[in-house]
Length: 140
Image (cartoon, rainbow, N blue to C red; front, top):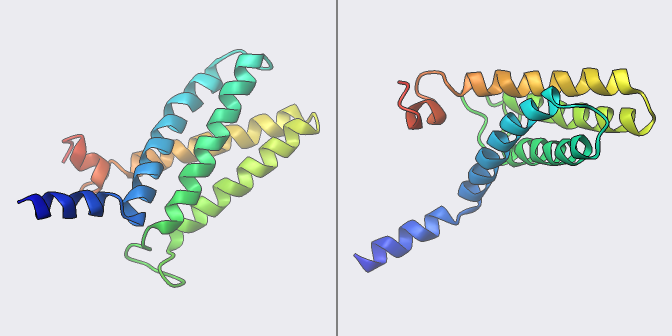
Protein backbone atom coordinates (compact mmCIF):
# COMPACT_ATOMS: atom_id res chain seq x y z
CA UNK A 1 0.00 0.00 0.00
CA UNK A 2 2.81 2.38 0.87
CA UNK A 3 4.52 1.68 -2.50
CA UNK A 4 1.28 2.50 -4.35
CA UNK A 5 0.97 5.85 -2.55
CA UNK A 6 4.59 6.65 -3.44
CA UNK A 7 4.00 5.74 -7.10
CA UNK A 8 0.95 8.01 -7.24
CA UNK A 9 2.88 10.92 -5.73
CA UNK A 10 5.70 10.33 -8.20
CA UNK A 11 3.24 10.32 -11.11
CA UNK A 12 1.79 13.62 -9.90
CA UNK A 13 5.27 15.13 -10.09
CA UNK A 14 5.89 14.03 -13.67
CA UNK A 15 6.72 16.63 -16.29
CA UNK A 16 3.37 16.16 -18.06
CA UNK A 17 1.43 16.52 -14.84
CA UNK A 18 3.34 19.62 -13.81
CA UNK A 19 2.78 21.19 -17.23
CA UNK A 20 -0.94 20.40 -17.01
CA UNK A 21 -1.19 21.85 -13.49
CA UNK A 22 0.67 25.01 -14.54
CA UNK A 23 -1.54 25.31 -17.61
CA UNK A 24 -4.71 24.88 -15.58
CA UNK A 25 -3.84 27.41 -12.88
CA UNK A 26 -2.38 29.96 -15.31
CA UNK A 27 -5.41 29.68 -17.59
CA UNK A 28 -7.95 30.16 -14.80
CA UNK A 29 -5.95 33.07 -13.38
CA UNK A 30 -5.84 34.67 -16.84
CA UNK A 31 -9.56 34.09 -17.37
CA UNK A 32 -10.59 35.81 -14.13
CA UNK A 33 -7.93 38.50 -14.03
CA UNK A 34 -8.43 39.35 -17.71
CA UNK A 35 -12.08 40.19 -17.12
CA UNK A 36 -11.13 42.45 -14.22
CA UNK A 37 -8.43 44.22 -16.24
CA UNK A 38 -10.74 44.77 -19.21
CA UNK A 39 -13.45 46.24 -16.97
CA UNK A 40 -11.18 48.35 -14.76
CA UNK A 41 -9.91 51.90 -15.22
CA UNK A 42 -7.07 51.98 -17.75
CA UNK A 43 -3.67 53.57 -17.30
CA UNK A 44 -3.51 53.28 -13.52
CA UNK A 45 -0.73 51.56 -11.62
CA UNK A 46 -3.21 48.84 -10.62
CA UNK A 47 -4.09 48.29 -14.28
CA UNK A 48 -0.41 47.95 -15.16
CA UNK A 49 0.27 45.47 -12.35
CA UNK A 50 -2.80 43.36 -13.07
CA UNK A 51 -2.14 43.59 -16.81
CA UNK A 52 1.46 42.46 -16.40
CA UNK A 53 0.30 39.57 -14.23
CA UNK A 54 -2.29 38.67 -16.87
CA UNK A 55 0.34 38.69 -19.65
CA UNK A 56 2.56 36.40 -17.55
CA UNK A 57 -0.36 34.03 -16.85
CA UNK A 58 -1.29 33.94 -20.55
CA UNK A 59 2.32 33.28 -21.58
CA UNK A 60 2.66 30.47 -19.01
CA UNK A 61 -0.61 28.97 -20.19
CA UNK A 62 0.49 29.04 -23.84
CA UNK A 63 4.01 27.77 -23.15
CA UNK A 64 2.86 24.95 -20.88
CA UNK A 65 0.48 23.71 -23.58
CA UNK A 66 3.43 22.65 -25.75
CA UNK A 67 3.96 19.67 -23.42
CA UNK A 68 0.53 18.24 -24.30
CA UNK A 69 -0.20 15.82 -27.12
CA UNK A 70 -1.64 16.88 -30.46
CA UNK A 71 -5.02 15.30 -29.89
CA UNK A 72 -6.76 13.70 -32.83
CA UNK A 73 -4.92 15.67 -35.53
CA UNK A 74 -1.18 15.72 -34.85
CA UNK A 75 0.53 17.73 -37.59
CA UNK A 76 4.17 17.71 -36.56
CA UNK A 77 5.32 15.16 -34.01
CA UNK A 78 2.95 15.52 -31.07
CA UNK A 79 1.96 19.08 -32.03
CA UNK A 80 -1.55 19.52 -33.36
CA UNK A 81 -3.53 22.47 -34.73
CA UNK A 82 -4.40 23.71 -31.24
CA UNK A 83 -0.69 24.48 -30.69
CA UNK A 84 -0.94 27.04 -33.48
CA UNK A 85 -3.31 28.93 -31.20
CA UNK A 86 -0.76 28.80 -28.40
CA UNK A 87 1.85 30.19 -30.74
CA UNK A 88 -0.58 32.89 -31.88
CA UNK A 89 -1.22 33.90 -28.24
CA UNK A 90 2.51 34.43 -27.72
CA UNK A 91 2.66 36.60 -30.85
CA UNK A 92 -0.42 38.58 -29.77
CA UNK A 93 1.04 39.22 -26.31
CA UNK A 94 4.33 40.41 -27.79
CA UNK A 95 2.59 42.75 -30.26
CA UNK A 96 0.32 44.15 -27.53
CA UNK A 97 3.16 44.78 -25.08
CA UNK A 98 5.33 46.40 -27.76
CA UNK A 99 2.37 48.55 -28.82
CA UNK A 100 1.82 49.98 -25.35
CA UNK A 101 5.55 50.55 -24.87
CA UNK A 102 5.48 52.63 -28.07
CA UNK A 103 2.38 54.52 -26.92
CA UNK A 104 0.01 52.88 -29.41
CA UNK A 105 -2.91 52.56 -27.04
CA UNK A 106 -5.57 51.57 -29.59
CA UNK A 107 -3.36 48.85 -31.08
CA UNK A 108 -2.59 47.59 -27.56
CA UNK A 109 -6.27 47.55 -26.62
CA UNK A 110 -7.24 45.70 -29.79
CA UNK A 111 -4.63 42.95 -29.40
CA UNK A 112 -5.36 42.50 -25.69
CA UNK A 113 -9.10 42.22 -26.29
CA UNK A 114 -8.47 39.72 -29.06
CA UNK A 115 -6.18 37.64 -26.85
CA UNK A 116 -8.74 37.63 -24.06
CA UNK A 117 -11.58 36.66 -26.41
CA UNK A 118 -9.39 33.82 -27.67
CA UNK A 119 -8.92 32.68 -24.08
CA UNK A 120 -12.67 32.77 -23.50
CA UNK A 121 -13.15 30.73 -26.68
CA UNK A 122 -10.59 28.18 -25.51
CA UNK A 123 -12.36 27.95 -22.14
CA UNK A 124 -15.70 27.35 -23.85
CA UNK A 125 -13.98 24.57 -25.80
CA UNK A 126 -12.98 22.90 -22.51
CA UNK A 127 -16.66 22.61 -21.64
CA UNK A 128 -17.30 20.20 -24.52
CA UNK A 129 -18.39 16.64 -23.68
CA UNK A 130 -15.53 14.47 -22.49
CA UNK A 131 -13.08 17.32 -21.87
CA UNK A 132 -11.35 17.24 -18.47
CA UNK A 133 -12.70 20.60 -17.20
CA UNK A 134 -16.28 19.70 -18.19
CA UNK A 135 -16.00 16.36 -16.42
CA UNK A 136 -14.52 17.94 -13.26
CA UNK A 137 -17.34 20.52 -13.21
CA UNK A 138 -19.91 17.74 -13.60
CA UNK A 139 -21.34 19.22 -16.78
CA UNK A 140 -21.29 15.97 -18.77
